Amino acid sequence: MMGILEEVIGAVAAVEGVKKLDPNASLLTEGIAAVVGYKGVEAVTDHLAEKKDDDSTDSTDSTEQPAA
Image (cartoon, rainbow, N blue to C red; front, side, top):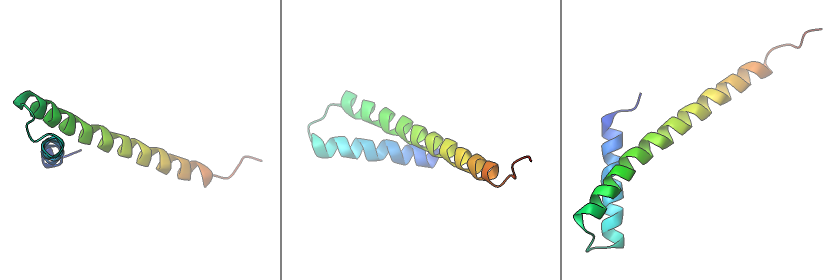
């Protein structure tokens, strides 16, 4: 499973990105960016885990011999 550190890093990166785009961003905007960054890391990690599972399933299926 994913660690909290990765999610926090995603939130911090998103807030820093907002600050670079708009140095006068409101606290609400920064808060929204933090939530999006937090959830974005979770979504990307889940997607990559699913893709890894699919790839391992595909490679297992291709090594099986067809029935004669």
